[in-house]
Image (cartoon, rainbow, N blue to C red):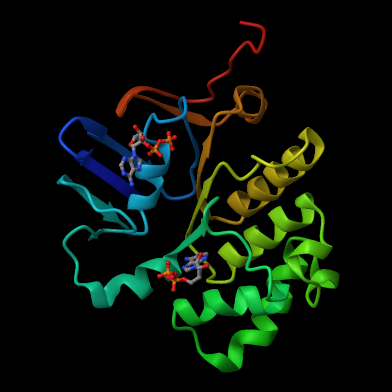
Length: 230
Ligand code: ADP
Ligand code: ADP
C-alpha cells in the first residue's frame, strides 16, 4: 500500500523563490528513504509538508489514503499522531526536564493523560535513555539528546517517522548509532524519511535516496551508493 504520495507539489516563498517545483513521488509502507540535497534545495520544506506544518501552493499530498492539504484543521492532531517528527527547530526546552519535554508532545497530539508516564518511560527505554528521564537538557550529551528527540517523535507511536538532519550535531559514532536505531524501527514496520546532506552516512546505509536540487526532484534511486572520494 502507498503510505505517502506527492502529486505535482509546488511551493513558492514570495515571487522569486521556488522551494519545491512539480515534485511527485510515492513511498510504500515500510520503506526507508533519504532525502538529500544541498542547503536550500527544499528538503525541510518537503519534510514539513508531511505533518502539514507547510502546505503546498498547488498539488496534492496523501498520507495513508487521506489528502492532507485540504483536510480540516481539526484533523491535524490525528495526522501528527501518525507522523513522528525530529526537526532541528524543535529542540528540547532548557527549563524542562526530559520527561516534561516529552509530555508536551503528548499534550500537543491530544493523547490521554493516563498513558503519559508509562508511554514516556517505555519510549525512552526503547532508545536506551530511560535513566535520563529526570535530567535537564544541559545535563545530557548530544548523542543522548538525539535519542531523546527520537523518543519524543516515537511517543505518538507513529506509522511514519520524519527526521530532518537528525545527525547534524553528532560525531560519526553517535550518528551511526542513531541510524541503527532508525533501521530497527524500520524493521518493526515504521516508514522512515530522513533529510540529510551527509553523503557518506547515506552511502553506508544503502537505502532509497531521493535527491533535490533547487526544489526539483532530480534523482530517485534504490540503494544509492556514493563514492565519498568523488
Ligand atoms: P533545505 O532544507 O534543503 O535546506 P529548505 O526547504 O529549508 O531547504 O529551503 C528551500 C528554499 O526555500 C531555500 O531557498 C530557502 O531559502 C527558502 N525558504 C525556506 N523557508 C523559507 C521561509 N520561511 N521564507 C522564505 N524562504 C524560505
Ligand atoms: P507549536 O507550538 O509549533 O504549535 P505544537 O503545540 O504542535 O507546537 O507541539 C508542541 C511540541 O510538541 C513541539 O515541541 C513539537 O515539536 C512537539 N510535537 C508535536 N507533534 C509532534 C510529533 N508528531 N512528533 C514529535 N514531536 C511533536
